[in-house]
Image 1 (cartoon, one colour):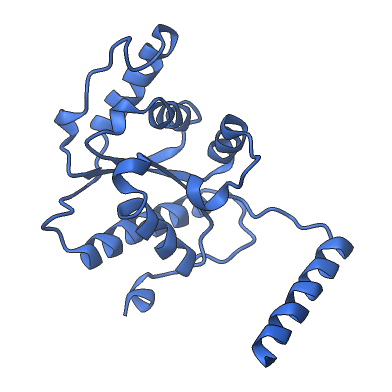
Image 2: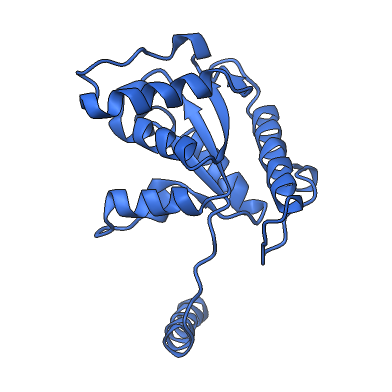
Amino acid sequence: MERALAKHLGRKLLVSRSLAQPVVARPVDVFINHRSIDTKRTVAGLLYDHFIRLNLHPFLDSKNMKPGDKLFHHIDSSIRACKIGVAVFSPTYCRSYFCLHELALLMECKKKVIPIFCDIKPSELLDLDHRICPAKDLLRFRRALEEAKYTVGLTFDSSHGDWSDFLRSASDIVVKSLIELEAEGSSRSFPLPTSTTSYLS
């Protein structure tokens, strides 16, 4: 009974505070580009949860979007606002127009992109053709894939890999990249973790 009452009062407080003060949206630190069917419940979902625990503000479509949101508007504005991107390549990644569009936009916006090759090698990324995407987008998608192929990233075998080591490595790379960006002069009102080790213990 007390728990239900506390929840009810907590909700009332949140509603009254949100009406009294405008909420300033926190900027996106990390945009997670992924193929939902392959990685939403594994690599991408775990990275999102891990970044949240590190006090980062990641964007993952299934976690940050709600019914009624305009798909392209919400995703595109999050990409433009993010500090870095994590592209999780998987076996069916190149069959998704949305994955390719997001990757191309990250590259066009000159965002640092950290590739993660999950159950796929860089050389195995599909060559695109007109059946996958409109002809007008082929060139920009090919350019983005080529750039990603030749960017140092992480590889991970989800069947035999060590998930704990993978999360630690990926998180360390993201945090170090954000610290480098901050040192280059970008402003941030939320403190970055200095290490991921304490969160993984």
